Image (cartoon, rainbow, N blue to C red; front, side, top):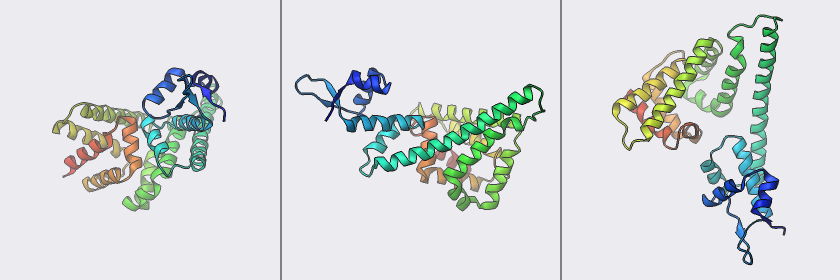
Length: 253
């Protein structure tokens, strides 16, 4: 079986030697040691693992998440590749929609037609809907019902340019406050209430009608579904989802 030194792996993979050393340090990809030379040597299996790491990084998974996936006893590389292909094809479709929007915007700038402010953001809003439906469609229908879900999508499609910008800024503020809360051992009650208020304001751009009970129900869904946890933990840092849930419970009690 061929064994490769770290510099050879760096050359064929495009991953720097420094990064490969780091992967070894955190236990993500630890090659064998050649007894005679004491060099790190990578087997074909190690290279397959490195390829998996790069696929997951392309899909914006954190190194912590990748390590959990690859170290799971039930990990199956063929199933993993199949899932990665599906996700990348969906990402490709989303990028094609954005490219199409760019083409239309160029045409409008050249005076071929007049593009409304709403049309400028249609592809972005449709991507939000598609991703939400793909990831959480079944769960949100069980929690809120078909009519509420469709009404929410309709409200999103009707967002103006100013509303779209405002909701994006609100989410960034929410992430900042969550990070601030996690950087101290015990966030203040005022900060937690501010976090929940920001989340409520963010929700109000999507929901037709806000209620504390529905807000609390959504928090329960965040806690029970690992995908929600991963989203907030990935956007901020580990523990963000729990802090958000605790803040919402405090706000709605």
